[in-house]
Amino acid sequence: MPMINSNAYMSDVRDIVSSFPVRALQLYAPKEEDIETFEHFIENTVAPLGVTHVTLTLYYKFEYPSHPEIVEQPATSVSVAKRVAAVCRKFGITVVPELDIPGHQSDVRRENMPMVPRGMIRAYPDMQEPYGEGHSTLSVCTRHPRLRPIVYDMIDDLMDAFETNVIHAGFDEALDLAKCPRCKGVPEYVLFAELVNDVNRHIKSRGGEMWMWGDRLLDGYRFPTANVGYETSLNNTARAVDLIDRDVVICDWHYNPEPMGHLTPSYWATKGLRFLACPFNSVFGCEQLIRATHVVKDSPNAIGTYLTTWSKMSDFIRLTEEKIPAYQQTGVIHHDENDVTSDSSNSHKFADQSSNVFLKMYVRHD
Ligand SMILES: [Zn+2]
Image 1 (tube, rainbow, N blue to C red):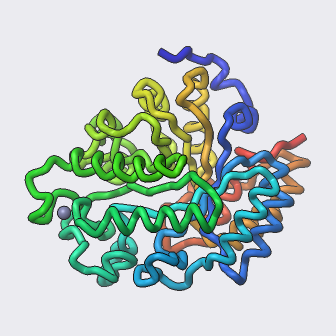
Image 2 (cartoon, rainbow, N blue to C red):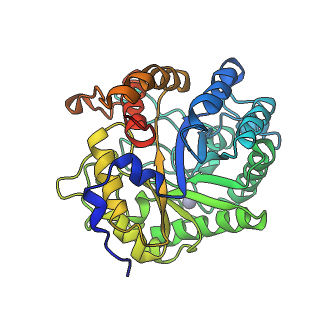
């Protein structure tokens, strides 16, 4: 059992964060028009503040050389990926490209809007798992014979272009499992775990490491979080936690404060899975999650933090750079918790709020 650390509720959040080996930041991947903004941000802000990993959300918006038919535009080109790799290598930062299976194969469903498939199931409609859970996204069939070969090619393309061996494979909010004739009757947690382990095996065959979101591995009855069903699972996937390889890295996303505090860090620590605390746009939620992680800091499984931004990259960078000088002098963050939103149509608000969380986590003040 890990030792309990009594300083968890006394130390400065910034000092807690800097005590972990992994300090990650998620951005949407740059394209031709904003690669210079990205390079400048890495050199002048990200590297000096000690961020160790930059995860780049791509999904299908990358010009996969091996599968042009699944590419969604506007896409990041291989030449932009090479510039990302070069600037990150210069400062010792690891790039973590992110694709996402088996869920998120469309935008989130909105009122009176059709679900538009993307990537694999747009190119190959027979790969879609029947849709059933509502208010979600489309999923790809986890046992479709075409799935693994395409995903392995995507991983190889990303590793080559971004010159990295760490891949974020998604696995969040996969709600439609075990519905098609191929999968029906197989427990959801079996379908989920076999795909996790197959993808992990491919990544490891190239000397790599796999990151994945943790929500499907958390039993929604045991962890009744703010977004139960999404943030934790109600679709019979949680037992996969004992079936998946112990060497995947769990990205433990919890964006909101919890009335009783966050219980998941100690869960991962005792399950023998390395994990990252992943806040988003609530300063209060971030502080709570990071302190709960610090409680188990003596566990070798508590490896760090990973701020998600879910907003236009250039907005996040501009707002962050604007706020840093004043914050360094005053230590004051202008943040209204009552205004924190999960409405993904308000990307600018996401950028503003997550840049406040960035200050809290990564910027030192007098
Ligand atoms: Zn299926």
